[in-house]
Length: 274
Figure 1 (tube, rainbow, N blue to C red):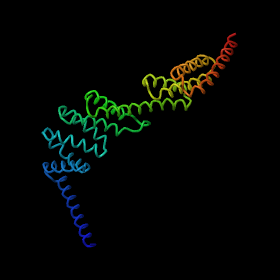
Figure 2: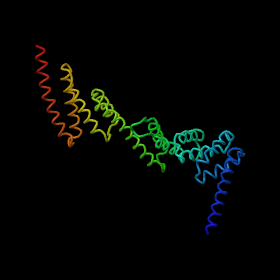
Figure 3: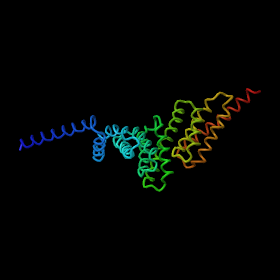
Figure 4: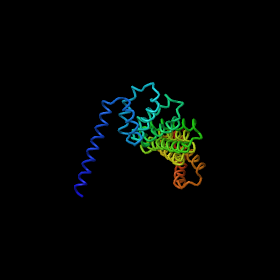
């Protein structure tokens, strides 16, 4: 029994080395027709890592030929399945531009968008690929509203929108924690203008009030009254939008402080003006 196992292992090694040797032979010195045949075989088996170098070798020789449509699609899909999303999105875009009438364009379009999505970083990092993914998903939704992939595209679009909203919100919040109150107020105003109906609206209005509150209380006398009034305005906007918010208990205390500070400021300014 032990001898049989050793023989089977030996035959398996011989087979693997033989297969590997054949692959390298075709890849490096094979005819293009043999490379094409082997590339298709590897693709169908899901051996995308091996299929890619073969497809790359075929890009030049088959340029302008009927087979090129299939080659471009398969290399795009191979990069996608191999999780090389930057190259996948590049090749899918190339395929879509070169073969707009292809039956594979719809699938290539959603996979191109998903390549940008899967390659996009978390919200705190550069969002260039996120923007590209949003544009790609929106383009897909506009072009194929009744597609079987439309629901998936809408889901990813909402998720990416939320990702950008979170980044914008966190940037404004960081200004607040760094005590750059004027920058925080401007950033929160911009956020609320650009993200109507955002899940972060309550927090954004709350932190705008807090930034306005701190800016008003810490301002020089000449600017204090105006900034305290702005802070009170920020409170009124929050309480109107979220009358049931749990944050109002804390904010009501802050409002009383502002009202007292406003009376004090007016008295100080009047004394100086005499």
